[in-house]
Image (cartoon, rainbow, N blue to C red; front, side, top):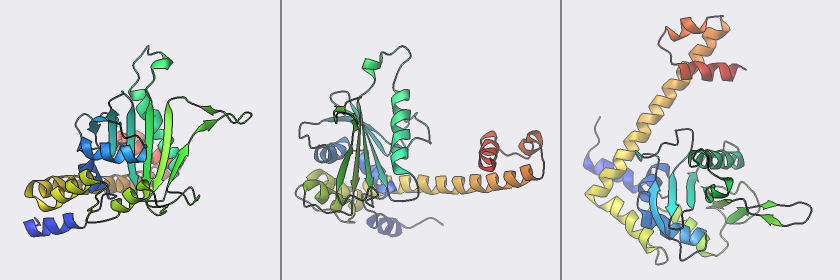
Length: 261
């Protein structure tokens, strides 16, 4: 059933910047990303030239790579920002996977390794999974024998919304948890939240992304159901040809085989 305009506004009012749907729309504004990254990377001269989000038609990285916001900076570096509310996976390995995928996709055949992109992974979570009671953590490669930090062009930064250390970063993270953002320190974020929630155009854009997320959720649930049914057929000894003739996809079959191993 189609929602009324007031029902749509009510749904949008409940969103916070930490929520996937709302963050994706916020991140489409390069100035919002620029204000955020200047704080998180502690660089007031940082410039965001453009942003690729999950719904961007230019996003050719594939659905397996999480691109809440891939920011291209003025100096040519890239920053992949991910917001994560679920604590049901290995976050360090997830960040590593995304970094590897982006690096390979953005490297042309014959590229000298010296020219491999400078990449920052900024991982924002609703929990302190590193359990160090810090708002922000910087993961670096260190020579065990000498303590020297090695710079290979990858920078991993993990930020959370639960630890308040009194810094501007903690204040920004507090904004991520609010339905209304009115912070003098973060005027661009505050203005964009207000625009998306209080104007007809803003509400429409958020609802479009929300509907896409809902459609994806239905598709993923259907795919999961198909995989379970294929697993049962495989356990009964059915052949691949028989299963694919039932209109299951090659990807679903491959996933079922993988899960049975």
